Amino acid sequence: MEIYEQEAKLYKALMHPARLAILDLLRDGEQCVCHMEAAFGYRQAYISQQLMVLKEAGLVEVRREGLNIYYRVVRPEIFGVMDAMREVTGKRPAAVKSKLKACTCPNCTGEHEISLVQI
Amino acid sequence: MEIYEQEAKLYKALMHPARLAILDLLRDGEQCVCHMEAAFGYRQAYISQQLMVLKEAGLVEVRREGLNIYYRVVRPEIFGVMDAMREVTGKRPAAVKSKLKACTCPNCTGEHEISLVQI
DNA sequence: ATACTTTATTCAAGATTTTGAATATAGGTG
DNA sequence: CACCTATATTCAAAATCTTGAATAAAGTAT
Image 1 (cartoon, helix red, strand yellow):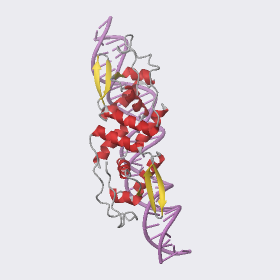
Image 2 (image 1 turned 30 degrees about the vertical axis):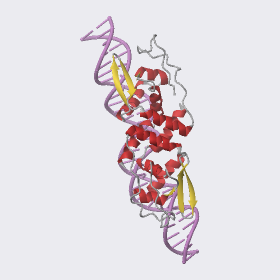
Image 3 (image 1 turned 180 degrees about the vertical axis):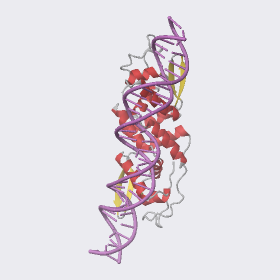
Image 4 (image 1 turned 90 degrees about the vertical axis):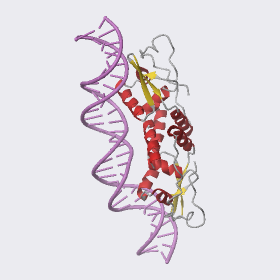
């Protein structure tokens, strides 16, 4: 039964709305924590806690660049799981382009456009 | 964010080894509770509790036939989620043919062979 | 060094899950 | 009806999850 235990742990990592939202935001590549604050309006400590859960599950990894810390998904197959779940519910989340104004990371201030969550 | 909440509830239903095992057993059609007792060695009350979780999540439904009660999956798309998760872990569970000896339901006593979990 | 920014950790109270034990219910049989 | 069998429900203690508040740490800039 230990395979089921391993799977159960991964489902547990997905078992939270904020973590699902974070993973969706990471679909098109790494994002800094400030992005997630700006996108969702959660407090920083809260996001950091949820990111730790994803990291302990082995789903994301971290990279530091100056002041900012970027998270990325290291098991892209997890998006297959999320897509399959949307076949069950029949719904998909809206893009999160809105309310990204407050982010101050170098990727966002000025030059490039905000990346969307395209599903 | 309510879509994420709905998804999170479904992941929560999958977040338990016993429930994953039960769903695998239901891959090839309905099974009575006694099957699950025989297949996994869990006590009856325990299985019944896990089945209630799956039922409340809307993943399974029930049919009574005489003394026996048969559960079946009503959202087969959930198997797509489970298969996708096995792409993440790279492992798949073994068939559960073994230890089904003790089951006494009419489908098992004598006439037909036990159905396997074929993935 | 000092101050500031970004992110991480710790702590604790409340909520929820897990699990076993005991008991209840519902249908079948004699 | 009395009894048996198969399954469901209830209850409670232990474990875990959630969430906010406070604080720490690590890097940058002056």
